[in-house]
Length: 117
Length: 114
Image 1 (cartoon, chains in turn blue, orange):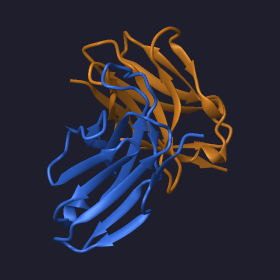
Image 2 (spheres, each protein chain N blue to C red):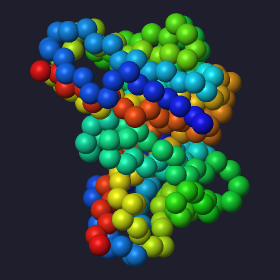
Image 3 (cartoon, rainbow over the protein chains, first blue to last red):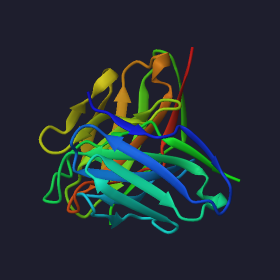
């Protein structure tokens, strides 16, 4: 069964803290994605990765960075958390590599609800 | 650039009634289209997707959607709503030439009244 896990369901952090959100998939997927979800805005792509040590900016990368040292793990980093980064963060993965496969299903983790005070 | 518009942020139906959630897309290339469902406090789960072939697509839990190119629509329907269908539904289009990035609509919250 497909499995994407996220390290925390709920996090509370202070403004200015460095925050790490971890995502692990056990499906040997090549593609991994980080989204944030806000009411009325749907999901917006922050960063994605097609391979180990490879990353691409999504639509809203400002204030975020990512790391992918191993195929199964994709980390989202908030270098200096701000209150406008309070949101639900969703990780996803899909099978295909850079060559194609946009029809591939993305599998989502349960999400991390982050509150920045 | 691709985009997705979901008409109605909240839809309420009675149990047993028809469910219709509207989605229109904009794409300069033939689209791949998806519907995802999010139950409270959970991640997203794929309901169905259109890639090529038959334009009427059947998904899980009795949902189906029809791709209408002339109307640039991909509306989601279910003949008879069940209480367990209460959730948020997202329509998405795939960025076809860049390895599967998804562009999501704003979401529609479905309420089902007894």
